[in-house]
Amino acid sequence: MITLANPSFLLIGVLFLALLFKREDAFLGYPRMNLLEGEKGPRFWHPLSKLLLVLAIALMVFGFARPQWKSLVRQERFLARDIVLVMDLSYSMETGFEEPGGRRKIDVAKSAAARFIESRETDRIGLLVFGDETFGSWPLTRDLNLISKKVSRLGSAFYGGTDLVKPFLKAVDHFREMGQSEKRILVFVSDGEATIPPWEKEAIIDRLKKMDVHLYLVGVQLEKGSSDILEIVRAVGGKFIDVKSSADLEAAFEEINRLEPSLVEVAVRGESQELYPLCILFALGVLFSLTLLRNTFFLRLC
Image (cartoon, rainbow, N blue to C red; front, top):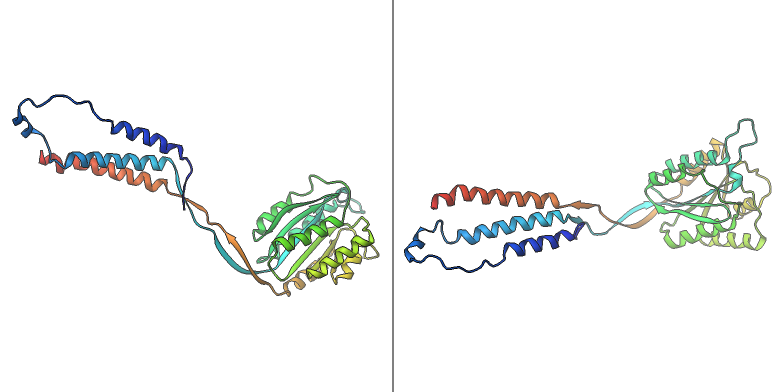
């Protein structure tokens, strides 16, 4: 499909061509018929010359309008797992670890998330962030470089307290709306400093089980004892990972790799290709041909 980036140039071209074809005022000439014998060049040359000039101008104007070829949307199929990465951006993540010179929790969480993204070469990842509200930072995509950049920029702003219910529910909704793979993985990075009402806890567990979501909780200074979020992990057969444990992270990576990917089909739009260089090149070619004919072949016929 061809589109024009600057269609207003077409109007300018139409006005210019209209002036070119403006009818000349009639006048009396050639009082003697024998003077017509001195008219130079063959009869077909005069309309042909004007036609070539009009063609060159039309091509030049069309080139200035910047025609672009936009390839049609095509369907691309590939094997992948669908993964939603949830990052905690509540105020508690701004604090440091309970050790001298400890790094901020969010910085440690970002490092773990970056390592995880690097290990997902063929999968699709979506990003959610939350505090007292949950925000969709980016939907499921194969562009893992983009997700890495999004994660690297986290930590400059935080969003109130910790609401653990909304990110679970939003992640499940995202799987339902955009997920295609049969293997759905939820990686939840949080310090888990919030309670979850019993009825909402049951609702989360029920939805995760129905959607067959594999849950991995990356705990940021979160003890393995009793907490509401850990109860959810145990109820759905998920895994707890200590954010500072390389062994836990590697084990989780290996476990996810063992999950068989399934066929995913997404629409891919091709990049636009500029066509104006071809138009300008053809226009110059026509002008060159016109000039060459005027000064060689038809000049000899005069």
